[in-house]
Amino acid sequence: MKLKLLLSTLLICSLNAQDLKTTINEVLSTNPIILERLKNYNSTKEDITSAKSGYYPKLELSLGGGIEKNEKKDVNAITTLRDKNNNPVDSLSLSVYQNSLTYTQNLFKGFETSYQVKAQEQRTLSAAYSIMVPFFKTSKTSFLILPLYDTSGNSFAPLGSKLLTAL
Image (cartoon, rainbow, N blue to C red; front, top):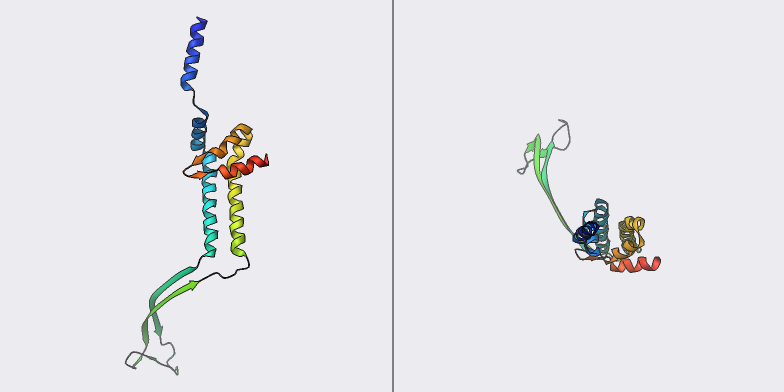
């Protein structure tokens, strides 16, 4: 009887066993705290690209249009409103159009762009650390496995090597 119970328990345990990589992938893809921090990490990675755009030239196009209406308010005014045929009128409507094309190239901003890039890289590193905080609470082993995790092409391997040297 004990042998049957032991065999059935072993069979049930072996059927529910998963390898470590599958378990970690499941936890990383379903834990809402980790998902939030992963999205924060991905958005701060995009901020690096935005900061690096300060090195590139900018081309801005501005267009505008509208109607301007002028009314004669003072009857004794020295100047009078006149239409296209130079006839005096009480009110005048004009069409206004504006456009501009501006090309701007950053020559030197006092190292602002390079410092912005460095600041965004540090924010990204901080966001990556915040992903790993829940793993600090569980065990060092799971913390060591996390840098191997790759989600949609975003590898943590370079970050993991930095963190492992800090331990």
